[in-house]
Length: 373
Image (cartoon, rainbow, N blue to C red; front, side, top):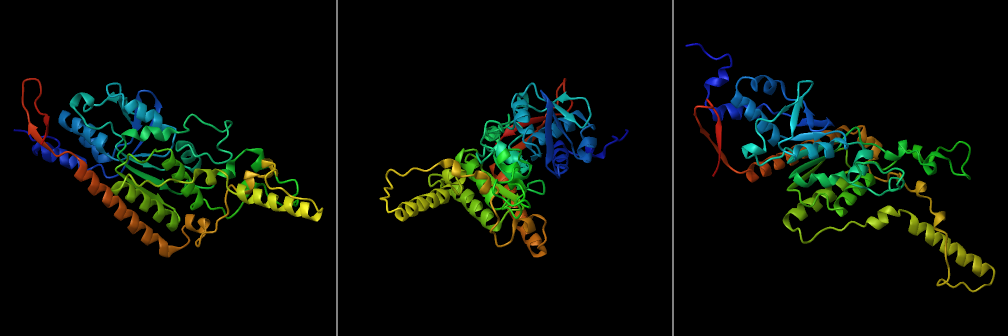
C-alpha cells in the first residue's frame, strides 16, 4: 500500500481542517480590479495544502471566508463587498492564477460572506471619503469621489479594526483648493501656503473628527467590536475606546458628536471678534450699537486658517507618528495586542459551534457534513 504524498491526508478530516485553519496566520489582503473577481494572497502553507485533496481545497475556501481581511485602499472595499455578497458569481484569484469559483460558498450553507472581520489601513484622504467626513475643503462637490460614504458597505462586518498607520498623515498637504495653495494677501513674502502648515494635529483632532463623522453617520453602531490601532493620541484613543465599550453595554445611552462645531471650527471666534469690533467702532463714533440689527459677513471666516489644526497635544503628533519616544512603543504594542486578543475571544464565543461528520457516498469519496449543535 503506497502512502499519500501529503502525510496530512492520513489524519482525520477534522484534524486536517484544523491544521489548515492554523495556517491562516495573517489577515488576507483583498482587492478587486474587475467584477466578479476578488484578488488575494494566501499563506504559502495554504497554497500548498489546498492542492492535496478536494476536501482541503473546500476547507481552504471555507477558512478564507472566515479569516480576517485587510484593505489598504478605500476604493477596493465597495467593489469587493458587491462581489462577495453576490455569492454564486464570486470568483477568487490568488495572485496571478486563473480566477475560480469557491468550492465552499453560499450553496454549501456558509454563514459568511467573507467580510465579517475587517482591518482598514487607509490614508487620511481615504478615511475622509470612506466615512463621508465633511471637513473643508473635502465637503465641496469638486472634491467628491465615488467612494464617499462607502462605509455603508460595512453592513456585513461584525469585527472591525481601524488602523492609523504610517500612511496616515495630514490630508491638507496635498490639497489643491486655492484657499490652501495660495498665500494670504497680507502674508509676508516668506510665508508658506496654508497646506504646508507645520505642527498639525493629524493624529489627535483629525482622527477624532474622522471617528465623530463615522459615528454620526451611523456606520459603526452595528459592530460587535471596534479596535483602534496605530499612531493615535492617547486622549483620543481613550475617548473612543470608552465610547465603543459603553455602546456595547448600553446602546440606548448613545454619544452624539458635535458635528456642527467641527465643520465650523473658528467661526464663532471670528464672528465674536467682528461683533466686538463693530461695537467698539460704534462707541468711538458716539453711535448707538444695536446687536439685534448687527450683521456680519461670513466670508471673513477663512477655513484655511483653521484646517489643518495646529497640534496642542502634550506629545506632538509629528513625534508620535515617527515614534521618536521609545518608551511609548512597547506600551502601545501591549495595549493593541490585548485588544486584538479580546476580539479573538469575542469572535470564538460568538461563532456557532460546529462538528464534522465524515460522509462517504458513490459520488464523493470524502467530505464534511455541516452540522450545527
